[in-house]
Every structure is written in structure tokens, then in C-alpha cells.
Length: 91
Image 1 (spheres, rainbow, N blue to C red):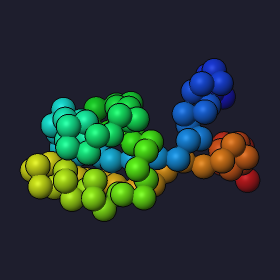
Image 2: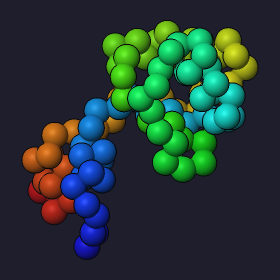
Image 3: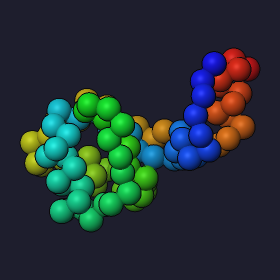
Image 4: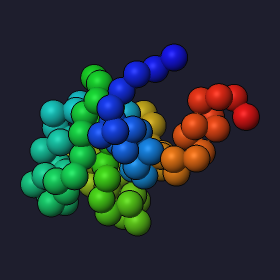
């Protein structure tokens, strides 16, 4: 059983590029300064979720690589509301 508000539900279902990186601080700097990406969050250590420019994942990964940031994982995440609840109830 989980309890959270509507804003958290919206965030959990929103499409994003999820990255696990070696240096979050440096990666955030690249996102903001070089790629002008502002819609992202850092929900936990080494994890970044990017909510814009989802069609540019190759360019994002390339810029991070050139900045010396190791990308341990990079994938598109998120789903629609129905899919989220179906996953939670095990269907």
C-alpha cells in the first residue's frame, strides 16, 4: 500500500528519460548550461529524470559522455495512469 498526493501520481506517470550517472552535479550542469534543459529532477543519488527533449536522448547522452560523465543507465520511463495502476495491482 502506497500513499501520495495527486502531484506525486502525476510525476510517477509522466514520460521521462531516466539516467543513472557517475556525477549528478556535473551532469546537471551539462543539462542546464550546454543543453538548456530545465525540466528535470534528481529523486535520489545518481539518478536524473529529464522531462523535456525526449526525442534528443542520443544528443543528451553524447554531451554527458563528452563531459566525462559515466552513464550507467539511460532509458525512457513513465506510463499512462491506467498502466501505472495495472502494474501496481499485478495485472
